[in-house]
Length: 343
Image (cartoon, rainbow, N blue to C red; front, side, top):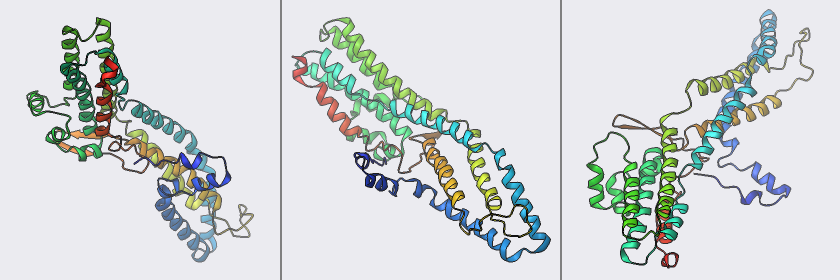
């Protein structure tokens, strides 16, 4: 789920910065700990082999290899590749979040324009909102494992109050192999026209305004489906992930401190801990791992009748379960049903 740290940065004190820097949950330290440990194991294996095992010409050959690797590392444009990759993933993440569907505008518009305190008017307002939220839940079930676990089948939607038994039968009668999230949207639009014919909307533009809000909401859900349907081309993340790992694999050799007295590339200071390379590893691998998590944000792929989860459940992901579709429904139906709004 999403890790909130707003309270930690609410002040400008040095202590708040230190507290934020060393948080573990959802942090860069947690994401790179295992890989950094493996890299250090490899580094010290080569270090011990170089210092204790290799001798004479073999040692000199290793030192030449280390010099060559260090010189050619610049052939891997790591900063450019990661920067471009992060830009793509962050833009994708932002667009997904912005299109998750915020129904409050529709609820307030319905409450203001669909007038009347009769039982039928109240039913219409609630039904429009319920159907629209139902379409959102149908999409979320396909793109989020958390929502799928909360609503494993269509009957669970009936139990939760999103759907009635007769409406479930209507949905099941639609013979499509694709998502039917558009059907509740169509029901909402039909109710708007029915309410207009019964005089609950004062003008045709009022109906159009409500229907426009419904269609805008549907467009946002369609964007989510599009992101689920078309991921970032796999070749690009493969290139980035391979480049980062190959870079630091080469660093195991190229960043060794040369100790031979007659070596022209002898290190000025002989250190046993590669501090600068560890910092570089932390920044670049942490950068990559964080955006790697963003690749699978709330996505869920389907293949025929089998569902294959590609959801990344890292601590930085958006928690769609706590997005609160149930509470969402209660709040907005309460707003739409408010008699004060339709006096």
